[in-house]
Image (cartoon, rainbow, N blue to C red; front, side, top):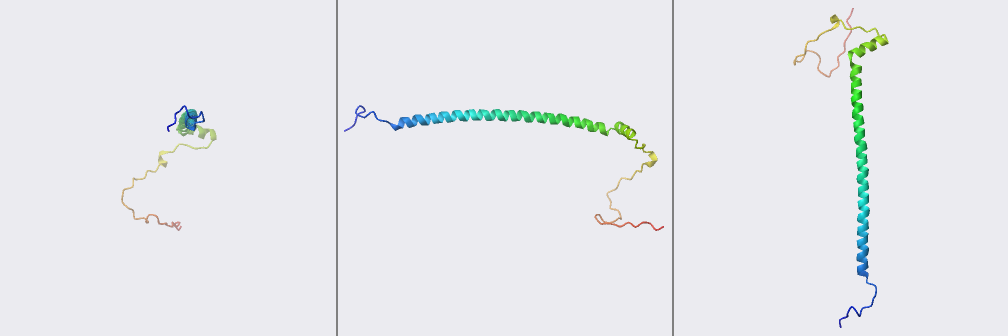
Length: 124
């Protein structure tokens, strides 16, 4: 004979309780995951901003050092430093400049490349 619901006892039914618990766990897990993800996005955004600021600072420092190097290499600055340090250096006279001819693409009669040659002092 088929049973009626009215005839069933008011006992504990496990199915609906497990369904409610599973839904609560899924919703709570989703909420915790969402909050964690937002925190990670915020953290990465702050790190990105710090690194961009560091990059901008390094570019400024690089430009400042490039200008300083150009100043230190300038002939006027070098002449001033020579005078300050009393090095006794003078400009080169045109008679001291030796101009060498541009080499042609031909091999010379000298030793083979990579071989060592001993040079003996002239007898005198």
